[in-house]
Image 1: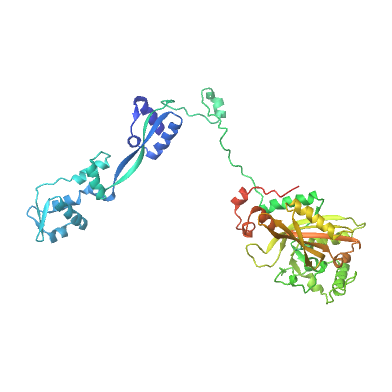
Image 2: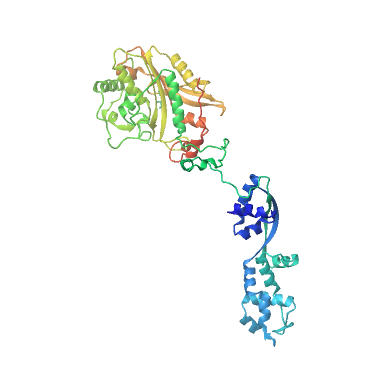
Length: 489
Ligand code: PHE
C-alpha cells in the first residue's frame, strides 16, 4: 500500500520532500512508512536522505485552550464594561481560569485591578494564543518567538522527528513485481510460472533451527566413561534395582552390623516392604560365620550376627552391592572364568543436601576378578583408566573400607584448580568377602568406585550440583552445552 503510494507519487513528481507530510497525506503511520522507505532504499528503488526536524505537539492544556479559548481571554470576557468586584468574578470563573487568566490579562494590559475590583482597559481583545495553538495543531508554521512563548507556558512540547526526502533510485520502477518464493502446483497448472519472477536463493541465510533432543551432561559423561570401560574389555553389570537388602549392601561385604554407615542417618531404609524374603541360605550361613567367628584365616568381628538386620530393605548406598551379587553368581559357575565388570548407576545416601551433595548420585564402579591379582595390578589399571579420562597424574593414599584390604583413595592433580582432588576410592576385596561366596582361593578382585557427578561438574565448570541434577536444571544450558570430550586415548 504505502509502497505503491511512494512509487506512484514519484512517477509524476521529482521528490517527496518530507516523509512526515507524505505519511499524513496518505493516512499511513510514519513508522510503517519508514520501514517501506528503508526497504526501497536498500533495493535502490528510491534514494532516501534523512533529516531531523523539530516538531511541536500541542499539550493537553494547549488542546483545551485551542477549543475553549485562552484563560486570559475568558477572564477578560467575564469582566463587564462597568467593572466587577474580584470576589464576584472569582465566584463566576473556574479557579484556574481566574488565576492564570488574571495574571496574563494584566500582563497584556487588558485590565486593571484596583481596590478589590476589576475594570477593562481596552474594548476588544484577540485570542492570539488560541489561534496559534490551532495553527500548530493543523501542522502550520508559526513564528519562532510565539513558539518560544507557548513552550514556556507548556502549551506545546517539542519533539525531534527523523524524516526523509525521497527521489527515484537507480533501479526505480513504478510498480514492483512481487517475486515468487516457491514454484507451486498452481503455478504449473495455470502456466503463469513462465512470466513469474522468482526470488533468488539466499545461500547465506541461516536455516531453521532443528528441533532435536539433547543429552544431559551426566548422560554424556556416562556414555564417555562407558566407552572407556568397553575399550578396556569390561562388561556391564545389571544395576536395575535401587532397592536392595542390607545383606547384599552390607553383610556380604563383611561390613559389621554395628557399622555407623548402617545407621538410618546414613541409609534410607524402606517402610514397605521393609524386609527381603529371598536370601541364599547356605551363603547366608557362611556370611554369618565369618562375621561372628571368622574363618579363612580371619578372626571375624566376634559379635552376634542377626538375620533380621540383614533382611532390612534399603535404597542401595553403593553399587558395590551390585558387584557383590555378580561376584557371588560368578563364584557359582564352574569352571571359574576371569571377568571384568563395570556399572554406572544411581545410589542413595541420607546426607545433608548442599551445593556439592544430593541425597542421590551416580556411582561408577569397575572390578576385575582373576587369579593372582596384586595391588600393582590395581594401580596399573587405575592409571590406565584415569589417563583415558584425561587424568594422568595420580596419587594413592592408604584408606579403610570394611570390604577391601588394602584400600586406597585416588587423587588426581587438577590443572585448572592447581591442586590434588580426590577422584575415587579403591581396593582389593577381602578374603572374608570372597571366600564365603565360593570363589577359588587364589582368585583376587581389584575394584574401584567414583561418582559420576564430580568429574561432570569439573568438566562442565558447574559449581552447584543443583544446576546439574534435579528440577532447577536449565534446559537452555543443556541445549547449548558443548560436548565435553574426555581425554580419550
Ligand atoms: N563402594 C565404595 C564407595 O561407595 C567405592 C569402592 C568400590 C571402594 C570398590 C573400593 C572398591 O565409595
